[in-house]
Each structure stands twice: as C-alpha cells, then as structure tokens.
Length: 425
Image 1 (cartoon, rainbow, N blue to C red):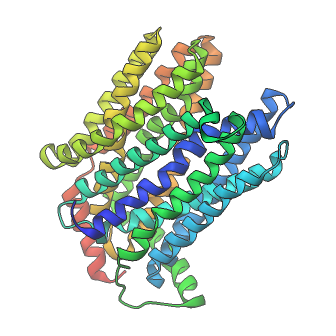
Image 2 (image 1 turned 135 degrees about the vertical axis):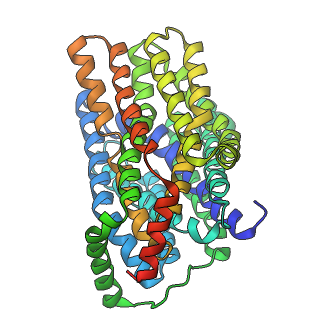
Image 3 (image 1 turned 90 degrees about the vertical axis):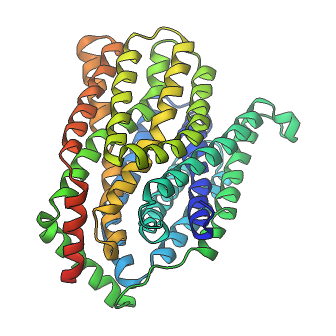
C-alpha cells in the first residue's frame, strides 16, 4: 500500500465517494423534496426523483460498455476518467446556483452529475489491473473502497454538522448549509482527483487508435465481445451471480432508510446509521482484503453474502433504533469487502488488454442493480400488508447469487481469459 501509483489510484475513491454519500444518498433527495419541489405533493416529488435516477441509470447502462471498448482501443482510460470526473465536479458545484422551485434544472444537473460519477468509475475500475501488483488485487481493491468509505464519511459527517449548526460556519440556516455542501463535494472531488491524474500511468496498448478509428474499433470490439462471450463462461457466470447479489446489497443501501421510517424510527437515527456504515466500512474493507488473501476471494464473498442473509432475517424482527445501529455495524463490516473482492475477483478472469470494456459490462450490471429488489419488497409489502415481510424477499437474491458464484472457477476463468489474450481478440 506504499506504492505511489496504488495510493494515487485509491485516492480517487476517496474523492468521488463524497458524491455518493453527501449528494446521492444524503442531501440531494432531501433538498429535492423540500427546496426544489416546495409546495408540491410528496408523491409527485418522489416520482420526479425516481425518474431522474432511472434516466441517469439507463444512460449509463447504454454508454458503459461502448465507452469502455473505445477507451481500450485508444489507450485513453485515464483521459476518459478525468473527463467524466470533471463533468461530475462541475455539475455538483452547479447545484449551488439552482434556484428554489427549479426542479427541472436540478434534475438535469443531477443526471449529468450521476453520469460523470458512474462514467468515471468504469475507467477507474479498469485501471486496477495495471495498478495492482500481481496477486495483490484483493488488497488494492479493498484499499480503494476503504479510502472511499473514510473520505466520503468524513465529508458527509462535516456536512451533516454544518446543517445542524449552520451559525458556526457563518450560514443563516440549514438550507444554506446544504447548498454550501454541494460546493464542498465539488472541491473535494476535484482536489483528490489530482493524484490519479499526475501519478497513475496510462496502461500501454499494442496499437493505439485515434479519432474515428478509435470509435469504430471500439464498436467492433464490443461486437466481438458479444460474439466471444461464450468462450468466457466463467465471466458470464460471475456477472450473473454479481448482478443478483449486488442487487440485494444495493437494495438494502437504498431501501434501508425507507424501511426504517416505515417502522417508525426517527430520521436522525437513520442518518446516524448511515454514518456508522461509512466509518465501520473503512477499516473493515482493508481487513476484508486480508481475509480474501487468507481465506480465498470467492469464499470471502460468500461469507459476506451469508452475513447479509442474517442481517435480512434480523431486520424482519427488529423493533428499536439500537438494533438498527447494530445492523448498520454488521453491514459496514461486509459491504465494502463484498464490493472490493468482487471487483478484484472479476479483474482476474477478464482479458487485461480489454479491461475497460469488460468493466463497462461490470458497471452496466451495477446500474441494473437494485431493480429486482425494490420491486420484490414493494410487491410483498402490498400483498401482505406488512413491511416487515417485504425485507425477507431480498434473501432470494442473496441465495441465488451465492449459489451461482459457488460454481465460478477462478483458475478456469483466468485460463480462458489468457487464451483469449493470446488469440489477439
């Protein structure tokens, strides 16, 4: 972890996680409802926010594999990373200037910000294969997630304090504090993106292409990947497993606050739980990386899935904020680890020269995540009339994903990826 390239790469997770915590999970949903949709029916503002998230996700799903393939062909992974990071930074800072009631402008800026965040992650993830020393993918990936939890949590904690005590910062009220928090995220993201721009090297390519030739070759490579995916059976199985269990993970992340509110827990308690996940996730992700080296990457992911199944069952019966905090600790212990080791495992079974393209597919499935889970929860809740039963439906996703992952052979996947490299495809 003392390698300058590794540290510089991991600091980008520290940088952009502020957007994930303060903007996506924290303040944007609240501010969107209470400031940009002031006087609007609650159901209407919820629909508008859901639509914004859906549009952003669909655009990333469409663009991710194509952009990855183009980045591979042009040897431009870092350039694409910095372009999307700049987009995200500018859009985040621009939220400060959106007037009260201007929900249409807020939605447009938010969508572009999410595209910047998600687009940058495609190329950030793809750089793992060139930054991590051989055999250290677990630890390097975990290190990135750990810094992400710490960095995102620190800034989010500061921003929450700003809203609780705005007078200390010379601000008139909580609304002004939230608007300033948008600027703080933009500055944080920009500042800590500098190390990856300066010290992380662009992975070499055999035949670098420019302009239209790069775009054309990218589309051709994408077409080839679809045709050849049957040769990488382990990649296909892993992506299927990942889609299922990460859907469960993301559903818990996105629906936990709503579930807690449906049980009558106070909003402040839910914010505290979110912070607990962030700060427990920092050391836990690093320790989970070591666990992956000792126990094996796949076994460690399966262990995390088992913990999630236990959390889901416990969530069905909990009846106090204290239990909610305990569950937050349990989730923090495994959430970053499952994400980090999944990324590391995937990096070992894909062709190195086409990492950006394959991580485009990986991130595409990540955007499809939390589609099945919320629908399952909603249907079960409506049919049974009890929100406590709805949380149990998520177990299906964890069980299905874990069973499929069990049959993914890492060595076989690495062998097939190497054969594909040698064929020059």
